Amino acid sequence: MSAADLLLELRGVHTHIGAYHILHGVDLAVPRGQVTLLLGRNGAGKTTLLRTIMGLWRASQGSVQWQGRDIARLATPQIAQLGIAYVPENMGVFADLTVQENLLLAARGARNAQQIDGARLAWIFQLFPAVEKFWHHPAGKLSGGQKQMVAVARAIVEPRDLLIVDEPSKGLAPSIINNMIDAFAQLKAGGVTILLVEQNLNFAQRLGDGVAVMDNGRTVHTGSMAELAGDAALQRSLLGLTL
Ligand SMILES: Nc1ncnc2c1ncn2[C@@H]1O[C@H](COP(=O)(O)OP(=O)(O)OP(=O)(O)O)[C@@H](O)[C@H]1O
Image (cartoon, rainbow, N blue to C red; front, side):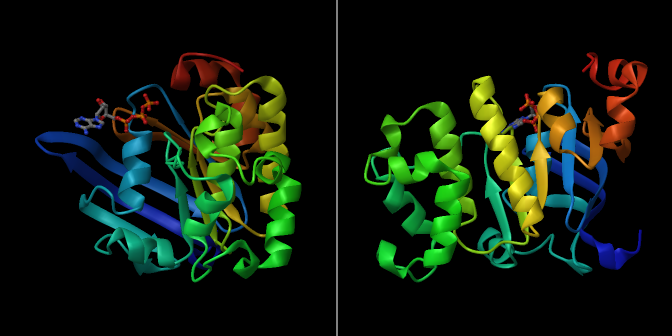
């Protein structure tokens, strides 16, 4: 794959949190237009890697390239402005604000719902009907799955090139997981590149094009999701479990 096809590329990334050396030289390639899955056991360093990409932790060594440009020293707002949206594991939804207000916060320059791009909002409502249904409700009253939808909707209220989501399926009922998978598939069809951290291998298998597996702060395997899904021994050795 040529460098032009890679939206994001990490090489040899190390991250320290205080005195702790957490990432020990991570390599990751995120090809344009694909869904890349980041897998690995608890504590492997997946969330730390996402936070490092977003500049919330600083890489102490290595490069983070966005379309060929090193962004490892940029501040988080500048990184977001490049067209990268990040949904953290706790979703960051403001409980006291309505769903509408949560989305408005992320819509650049819009002071009221009428100023959000109408076609985009209609598309978001179609992807996530709960967002429309609870538009005027405080987000804190929503279920975990509905909050997750609000969090992803907020991340895409402006056009984005890359959507990064930490554990989108965590704690969700199977029916909601299916909605979430449909929504990500539609986002991909709309040209959005997606990087997901997942523990749920079923979810990962249904969406992933490429996969990177982390362990102990390193990338220990990269390849296609199809290859990993078809190889129970590889799953066991990398993840300690099977699909
Ligand atoms: N703020 C912090 N201070 C110290 N150590 C931390 C901090 N955040 C994470 N760590 C450590 O870094 C390692 C990687 O954590 P991280 O959350 O990145 O893993 P993960 O793969 O996302 O795990 P999980 O699936 O459990 O969320 C763990 O050993 C964790 O204890």
